[in-house]
Image 1 (cartoon, rainbow, N blue to C red):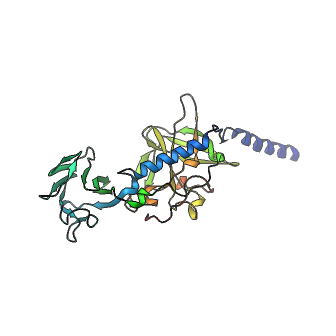
Image 2: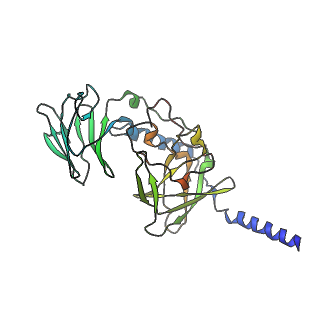
Image 3: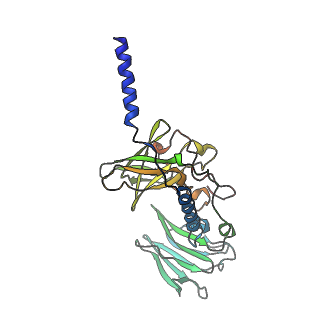
Length: 303
């Protein structure tokens, strides 16, 4: 009888292992390293474009009413010195609408045309305005409304060629099972400002690293899934507050997709203090070291 119990227990273990044979490393194309390198180059280009995260030069929350802006010591919204006149104009926040009025003689443009007065935000769209190398638009984060400022003149961004990263390793190109959530499912996400939102979650991704099965809750994001993930490398090798990834939905008729941790990347708050990054939810902080993707930036003024 005892032998039968042991055999049954062993059979259960073996069956459980067999049941997960659908997960693990997924085959890659012969040119896979080139694919990842091209992805990295596209990322460098997006980070260093005129409104790329690396050219972000300031974030300023507005008070209700009139906010004087410029580079002088007495304004409410102080842009970097010598980039704009000491008093460049007024930014008025009134019941959620932001209006800008430029001071006489201060050249501010929108889509190449000079503007003296302009609505920068009224609940629909975030038009950009420029002065010299500066470009700015409104940012809204729950009850906070502010100005996000970029400076196209940025030597560090000009010289950027990519973050430190692990060697490309095909073992981190994993087959994952997509488990849809009931419609309307949300998960709690907190950002670096301490604000919490309930984000729509289309489903859960189930995957295997070595012999262990893990899951990640996905966030709905246009045509792909967005993943915020933490792991044990955050302690000393990768960014402390986790990394980001985009994952394709399964093709029609399939329950499976690919998680490629070689494309795990740093959130903007890892290298720029003027950002409002979202942090990994508790259930996405994995008890495993994911030695793939981008490593912690060095010599960057992040959070």
